[in-house]
Amino acid sequence: QTLRLDFNGGVNISEFSFTANNDNTPPVVTITSPVDGIYATSDVSLSFTGTANDLADGDLSANLSWESDVDGPLGAGASFSSSLS
Image (tube, rainbow, N blue to C red; front, side, top):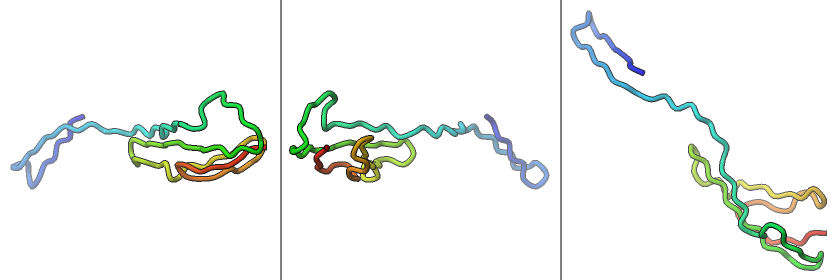
């Protein structure tokens, strides 16, 4: 896009180009632990670790919220330990 600005009767004319960026993409979330397909018994504490990165807002890993469809809320943040039922 080109934007033209005219000041005081057109004596000072300036043109410049810019690219509008309206992309509001979701953060990229990566779970690094536990690994996919792991088998664990209910008496074993598991380490949960993940990252969340956003193009506009940067590192959001501290804002992660972890939950289980069986056990409900498990923990928050980039890492914690918990056991599952």
